Length: 237
Image (tube, rainbow, N blue to C red; front, side):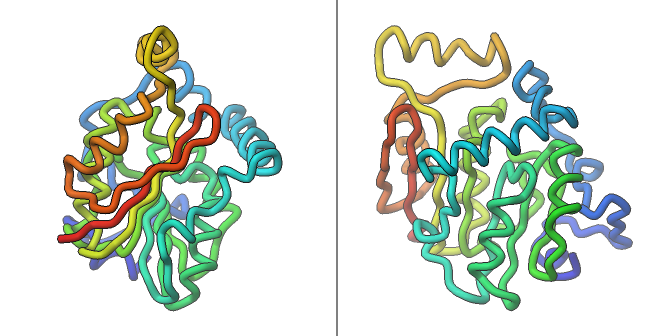
């Protein structure tokens, strides 16, 4: 955690991590909180366990939720952000890629998810923070790479979260996000109504790439598999 403090916009004078993670919501309260059914489920202990099983099954079936390290062009010694990290499996994978001289930071708003993350992953190059994805407590240009896997659809303002990820990237830093997508037409209309139903949503297949370019991401590309899509690129300046 001492390695994280210089990266924070407002580091605490006496940082305490009684639960194994640094809670930044006290100094940076969440602007908007998802209280929908889906987010509430994942935030519960039962839901956190179900999430583990669902994510593991998805990785085994299609391999799409595996570590995005290749898309992030990670090198040993770099600092990487895993937004909406959940139980920290991807965070730990990224930590192994950047090595002990690097640092993987997992951020989530769910206490139950973070509790599972810190219980499982205690390496010296991993740190977990509780914070609002829409207002990250990190300095501008402080991170070498950033990812968010199947988390943007649960954030009330996903565009704000994406803008924040790009803001904290250093020039030349890479970003890779994975989201559920829908084609245009009736299915898209249904997907866009999901926030009112369960607190989750889907995106049009051009939506995330468009937002990323708007906030300064260069070389934006996508890869789609069924109803899920990778968007990745780099910060040019």
